[in-house]
Image (tube, rainbow, N blue to C red; front, side, top):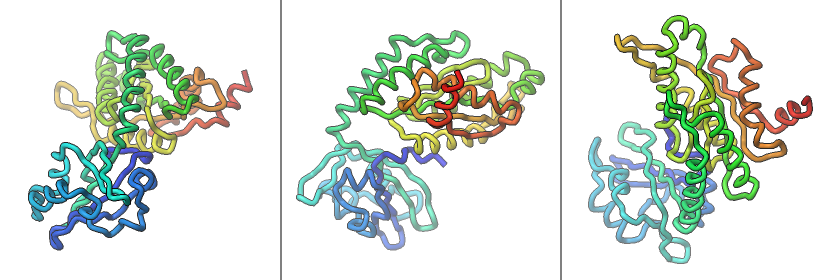
Amino acid sequence: MMLGHRSNDAVITICQNNVAKSIEITDVNKAGEDLLGYSAKEIKGKPLLQILPPRIADMLKEYVEYESDANNVGHVLSKVQSFSTIGHDGKEYGYRLKVVRTESNGSSIIFNLVLQDKTGLRKNEALRKAIQDNFRGHEVIDTDTGLPDRYSLGKDIELMGYYSNKGDLRSCFAIMQLDHYDELLSQYGRTTCQSIIKHVATLSSNTLRPDDVVGLINYKRLGILLLDTSIESARMAVNRLRWQIAANPYVLPDRTNVGMSVSISFSRIGGRVSDKTVLEYCENTLESMGASAVNVLTEVDDAERSKSEDKK
């Protein structure tokens, strides 16, 4: 299931109960506690309106409809121009808000409210723009797929290693390999296989966050740069991506579905080993598995990278 956020994002989970006609806070993660200044114990089970300023609370009271497929709290909050909450000191604190519907269970609908602090956000956005400008400055595009090539990904990794070592922005890198490539090539030919890898790249771009980078390693492998994420969050993101690809087969011109699976190796950027080696070691991990690398997800940690470097 697409969560729409990573584990290091600040998230308030709320439940709209159509029978009770209530909107309650059901959870807040650690990042949310730090950002809001409330502990989970303080606000779990409390009405959402309790931490909202009157103008937003009044909007919810007026426009939320407690019926199935009606104007729910997610729809209303998505239209709020300037979202804020009330702190312990009674002051308003503004955030950028993303509303993610996660599930519904009979009369209850669950939403995650993903928050970003606006003050920190301005600094973060300036950094992201600088990073994207740097990416474009050295980017070489593969003419057949329209994706950044292997050289570009290597330069991207080095750049993110610099920001990671400064403590500005964490990031991770992954290589995704199309399983059973030789069989696909034998059955469908090189042109179709090239279309399949482009299909996988499109699914990846649509599934990941806008700032993440998807590039071409070779004819059967894609490289993925995950910005602003921990290794734990990266594992969740690429695992979700693995199942998303399996659920969306490539469709041939004759409407035949070609099922796919991918294997992924991933690593954090920034550590004891030079970031120039991240791409190589992620790739070598998949190579070492040979034909057994089918629907595999594996992390290349610092210890493994160190051992590989010591052998050189």
